[in-house]
Amino acid sequence: GDSVTQMEGPVTLSEEAFLTINCTYTATGYPSLFWYVQYPGEGLQLLLKATKADDKGSNKGFEATYRKETTSFHLEKGSVQVSDSAVYFCALTHRDDKIIFGKGTRLHILP
Amino acid sequence: EAQVTQNPRYLITVTGKKLTVTCSQNMNHEYMSWYRQDPGLGLRQIYYSMNVEVTDKGDVPEGYKVSRKEKRNFPLILESPSPNQTSLYFCASSSLTGHGYTFGSGTRLTVV
Image (cartoon, rainbow over all chains, first blue to last red; front, side, top):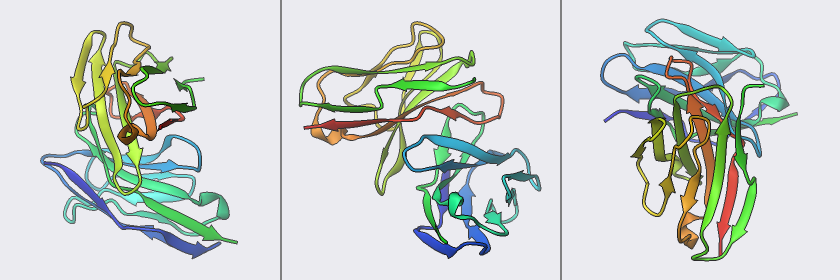
């Protein structure tokens, strides 16, 4: 069946550092790929998405590119802020009716 | 504002006492779903609904019930809660158009 694997955390970085959170997937066909973010005490929020190969999703300085050849959707940000501290989930879906989530990566940004 | 509203946000209950967690969305979404989030296990789907009067089991349905009598509401029912149902619960909805899910703020349930 379909699955999503993302790097285990926690990831701790200093403010203004470069961020990469790795995500790879196993799926049949051509799923849509997502990154969700969960801030402390809140629900998940859609951060960005990509629906086909080579698409780049971007939002709030974060980017991820749908790589079909490597089945990856790594999340990147050039300069992180303390306010980016959260848990990040990579996810995939074929038709939006069932989303498969990775286990989440906790990110700590130090001032 | 487009949103999914869950209530209550926090709940402490005793084993065996029936409870209901409500979920309501104002986006006219067809699809609604319940997840539980546990440390080390990530998000696991409990039940989902493709439309009114259409519900189906997710990955961990045991001990839970749902109903979808109206398009906007999708309550989660625990008929006889047990301590292993202590968890953080999320309701989510989707329009099934590839835009992803909208999540509620969560319900933290403790069963003692």
